[in-house]
Length: 303
Image (cartoon, rainbow, N blue to C red; front, side):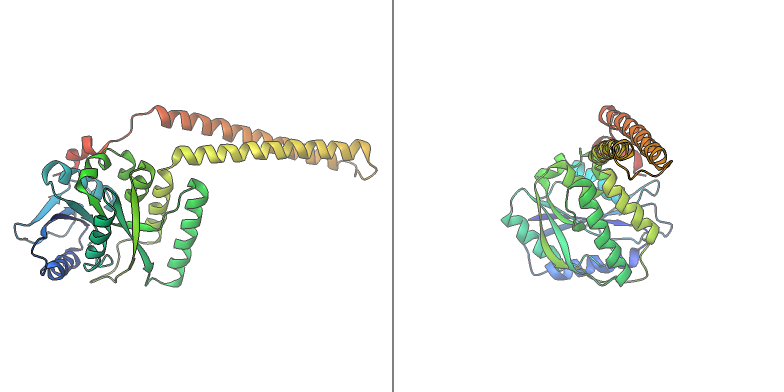
């Protein structure tokens, strides 16, 4: 079996080198498994080490972030390095070398499916776990989809040519696959710990990462908000009818309150109408504009 392992790196060369050593140690006993590493250097400021011939470093001419670095790496592999499977993983050690076997075993059982590793045990602090759970709930509420995995996955090479033409992976890799309708499933794995240093992802980076996942469903999100604004308009109209009925047909009216409440409902209706109009034009524009296709554009980012 031929296996390509894709790892995006920004300055974290020490961790990446240790990860590759661990991978080779774990699979050394399997003589039928041939491995090639593809490291996407996301315009690191630290110089990359000199690696042996089975480690290919793809240098980018600008920093694009790890999601887009993954998309570029997949496009490069699709054009230049046929194999049986492509493993996508982070290079800091949180995606463990030993779990590659788990992904491959599941991939062999679930033919033609992308296999994600769902992290069942995490080692972050309380607040990270709290906001991560909150993010998953908000994602499900806004998009109607469930997301419980990151980048760590096994991709059958025969599906890679479909995947690199999915524009959404440019903004968020796993979210783009969910949106693409390509067949996927997941297997439970434990999250590892970083080999060296601290994560480059701060709180604001994580928020942007979460928003990027939601942005994949821009049109779905707009339609859901559009439906909500129509609901708000309906409730406001009902409120006006109720207030008018109380004012003219019951003895409970307080002087001046009916006019104030009706005016408030009218303001809500006007605002909801403007939001609906704006969302409608955004959806129409999104559906008609030409989307970025990674497979057609990725070469522009390779140094």
